[in-house]
Length: 310
Image (cartoon, rainbow, N blue to C red; front, top):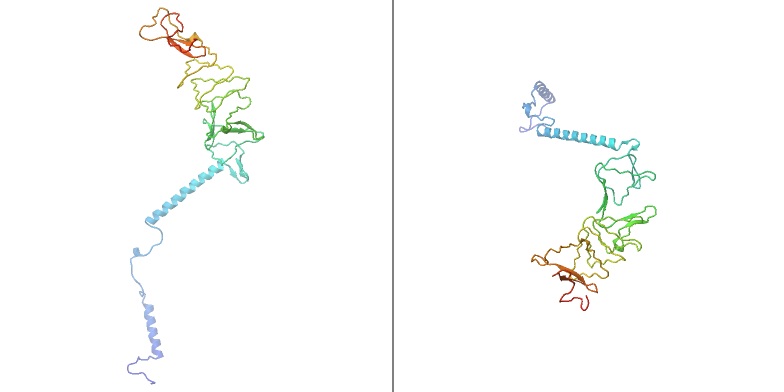
């Protein structure tokens, strides 16, 4: 048991092991090509961005540069227009209550204020708003106030109301629920293109005059009633009364014949081309016509519409 068997490994001495280790180290130290693998340099991994990745990187850098230039331009515009400095903004002030105050003349285009906003000036200074060859328009929903060079127009689908901000008194209102349209004190003339109302009246001591430059049309869904102490119609052209059934003129009716056409005595009454009629009136005010057959004829007719008297 103390020696090795015939099939067992050969046991080396300490000296043999040292000699073998020295020889192996000597061989490794003299072999400079140990572990060297010859490969092509082009196949080695190279650092950096090349090809499509490099082009993409250049595009990103150019885009960032453009954004930086745009941001610089916006900053310069803000600094030049709004004039923001270390002490705040030189042209306007922002207050905690939501008030925006302009401290100098401002040039702006379309302004979109908040809901129920108010535009006003200082107490002892005028508020001057000027349009550069354009009308000044204040609009909130369907209500619009347009100040132009030759006119000022107010358009609203729900009506309008002018209120004194100090006393809260209504100076002028178009409240259709009360069915009254009161003009403010001192206003004597109302100029409109089209008016829809239930009743037009004036004071008991003043006249109600309606004047038009072109054609006046008075229409009512439930009829038109004109009453007054004296009713006078003046027109430069024709007056046309239309009715489905009849037209009744009750009271004293005066017709001025100065503008009625007249004919000469030399013409024939019945020349076969047209007929002439004479306008007659009954005692109760009923009007009827009689065909003219000769000179100086009266209102005699075979069918008397007035009854016993005419």
